[in-house]
Structure formats: C-alpha cells, structure tokens
Image (tube, rainbow, N blue to C red):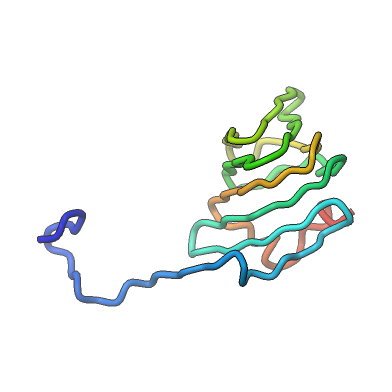
Length: 131
C-alpha cells in the first residue's frame, strides 16, 4: 500500500484535482488601488490581492475564516477596534464573522485563503471592495 493511502480506499479512481496557473487567471481591477485574482475548490478559495499604498478596504465581516499571507508590503488591520500591523512574510488568521478593515501602508501583495469560499466574490456582490 503506498504511503498516505488509507486502508480500504480505492486508489485507481480519478481524483477531482484542479491545477491553476496564476499567469492564466484573469485579474479583476476592483478600484484604482485594488486588484485581485482568485481560484476556488469546493470548500476553499485562494486569492492573490494587489493593494496600492493608501488602499482602504472598509470595515466588513464574512462567514469565511481568512488567512492573510503578506508576501511583500505592509498592511494595517483594524480588528474589532484593535490595530495590528502585518508585514512581508507574516500571516494573520481572521476567524469567521470578525469585523475588520485594512489599509495598505505600502504597495502590498497578499495571498488570502478563505473557507468556506466567498460566494459574494464569485457572484460580484462585493460592492464594499469596488468603492
């Protein structure tokens, strides 16, 4: 039995795998300071966000738990009234339904992971990002 294959499970069925190439994912310009790309599976979404210095994402909350990985740049989060600065190579876990806002203190690239997926993003019902 190969490593990682549980006993009693079929191993010859085709797995529902998805392969993504960020270079092939369309970039969506939400406003003059914010653009994104995102992909999703059944229960998880990964977004690549580009925030220009001065970008403001207004206070909001969502059902999805969020993990924000700042690749480069610097973000100031306000989480239920508390300020937190996140810099390159740092991660922030935002639990479900926590009210938060974001300000880009520098040009910033992040990867944000959401579970469950952000149906509002898929349907374009995210007007707070488009201001």
